[in-house]
Amino acid sequence: MALSEFEQRALAALDENGLIETFRTLLRHRSITGHEAGAQRWLSEQMRALGLEVDLWEIDVEELRKHPAFPGMEVDRSGRAALGLVGSWQGGEGKRLVFNGHLDVVPEGDHANWSHDPWGAELEDGNIYGRGACDMKGGLIAALYAIKAIKDAGVPLAGSLLIQSVIGEEDGGLGTFATLLRGHRGDAAIICEPTGLDLVPANAGALTFTVRVPGKSAHACVRLEGVSAVEKYLDIHRALIELERERNSNVTHPLLGKLNLPYPLSIGRVQAGNWSSSVPEELIFEGRIGVAMGESAQQVREQFERTLHTLAEADPWLKDHPLEISWTGGQFESGEIPHDHPLVQLCGQCVQEISGRAPEVKGEPYGSDLRLLINIGNMPALLVGPGDVVCAHMPDERVPVSELIQAARIYILAALRYLQG
Ligand SMILES: [Zn+2]
Image (tube, rainbow, N blue to C red; front, side, top):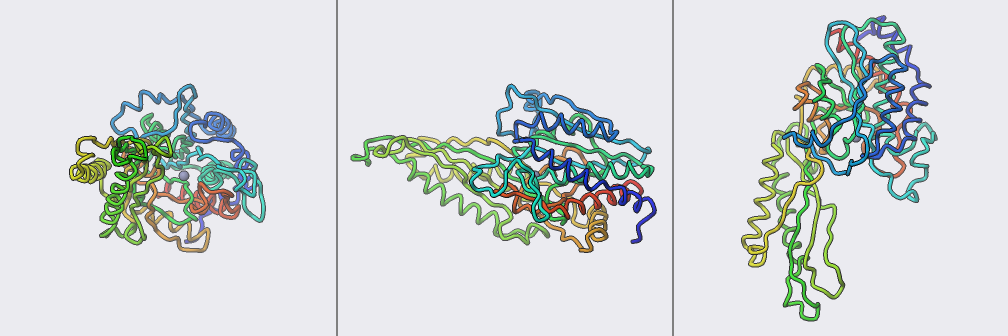
C-alpha cells in the first residue's frame, strides 16, 4: 500500500532524538511496582509539553479493592500515592484509539548480575540497557512520540488518540483497571508490550496462590511421633504436576495450541520448618497457575482446590488438618480477539510496511492488561511493541534503538489508518 501524503508527513516529523532521550530519562526513574508516583508526575509534564490534555489523578485503591472484578495486587501501597495518567488529543468526532503501556517495572535484582547500570539507561552497540527498557518503557515512549509526530506534522486528526500510562501492571493490573473505570475508553487499543514487533491478540491468564500445609512437630530423634509437612507437600507437588499435565494435554486453540506448555503451573516459593532437628510443623508454598483461553478464573480456582481436597480426603492426617488455600496477588483472566480481527490485519499491514517483514500472529502464555481492555473496556485490543520479551525481568534488560524507532513509525501508521478507516 502506498503511503498517503499525510502518512509521509507524519513519519518524517518523528523526533527520533527526542524519543531516545525522553525514553532514557524515564528509564532512570526507579518506578518499581508500588513506587511509580514520581515517574507518573514527570511523564504527565512531558505530555503537557506536547500539548496533550492530561488527566493525572489519585487512584482510590481501597475503594477499587471492593469491586468484584478487582484484578489483584501484591505490593503494599499504603502511605504512597497511586496515580493514574492519561494524555489525550481530541481531533474530529471520529473513532478513538488507545495506546496503553505500563511504567511500573520489577525489581532489578542483584547488580552483580548486570554488566550495565540497571538505572543508567546506557547506550551501547545499538541497544539501550536498563530495568524496564523492554518491559515496557520503550513501547510507552514510542507511542507518545508517535502522537507527537502526527501533531508536529500538522496532520488533521479524524478522531481521538489517547495514551494511558498505567501503574501496577506487574502485580495484577490495578492501573489499567482504574483507568477504565474512570471512563478513559476507546474503540480499540494497542498495548505497547514487547513482542519483537509481532502481534499478540491472545494472552492466557495466570492466578497466584498460597497454600499452608499443616504438620506436627516432634524431636527429629522420634520423628515418627510427628507429621512432616514437607512429606505431605511432596504428595501435593506430584498431584500438581499431574494437574498441569492434564490441563495442557489437549489444547486446540489455534495460537496457544502451538506452544510447548501453554498453561504452566509453577511453584515459586516453598518455606518450611524452623529447626534442623525438628519435624516441620508447617509448610507454605506459593505459585501460579495458567488460565486457559475461554476459561474463567473461577473455574481454575475450583479445579485447583478440588485437586487438593481430593488428595487431602485420602490422607488420614490432612483429612483432619485441612490445607488452607488462598488466592493472593495477581488474578489475570485470559483475553483474546480473533486472530483475523480487522485490528490484527491493520497492525499487521503497518508492521509489514515499516519493517519489511510480515509479523507472526502469536498467543502468549503470560497475563497482561489485554484482558482488562477487552473484557472490562469492551474494546478490541492487541499487543505489539519493541523488544524481546525473553529479556524482560532479566539482568541486562535492553531494547534495540532501531526497533524503538520502528515501533513509533508503526504506531504512526496504525493511528492514522485506524482513525481514517
Ligand atoms: Zn509488561
